[in-house]
Length: 115
Length: 108
Image (cartoon, rainbow over all chains, first blue to last red; front, side, top):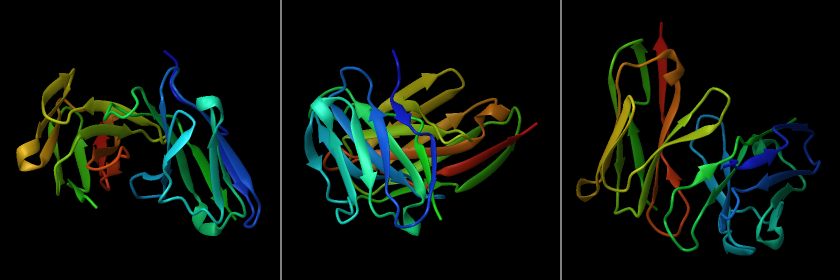
C-alpha cells in the first residue's frame, strides 16, 4: 500500500512570494490533515478535511494561508504572501475512517525556507 | 487545551542499552500514537495505543489511560534508533496534539 505522497520535498522562496504544496493521501482515506512543524517543536494542526469538506481550520492563518481538497482526494496548501516565520516543515497526514480516532499516517513533508 | 509532556527531552545511549521514554497528558484521550522522526524528517508510526500494551520487535509501549501516561521502551538500542520520538494524543476533535519530543542519540 502506497503511503502519503507530498511534493515538493524542499522549497526556498523570498518573503512576500507565494508557494503551494501538494498532498495525495493513502487511497481510500477519508480524512486529510495539514500540520506545520517549526524547528524544535512538534507538529501543529493547520486544517482538517473530511472528504472534501473542512472540519477544522481554526488554527489556519486565513489572511495568508488557504487550502482545498479536490474531489475528496488530493489537497493543496497555499501561502500568499509568505513571511519569514512561515519557514517550517509542512506535513500532510491521512486516516482511514470518517469520524473516528483512527491512526494517522504522515507523508515525508515539504521543508519551506523563506528568505 | 490538553498538555502533553515528554521526558527526558534528550537522551544519549550506547548501542545495546535499553531506555524508557515517558509521555504524560493532562486529560482523557481518545487516541495516542508514538512516532519516530528520522533525521530526514519523516514521521514513522510506531504504535497506535490509546490503552494497553503492544510490542513490535525491540520496541514496546504501554498506556495507562486512567493515570494519564504512556511509556515507550526501546531495548538493545541501535544507531538507527537515533532521532526524535514524539507522543501525540487526541483529546477533542480529531487532530493530534504533539509533545515536544525526546531527542535520542545512540552511539556506536
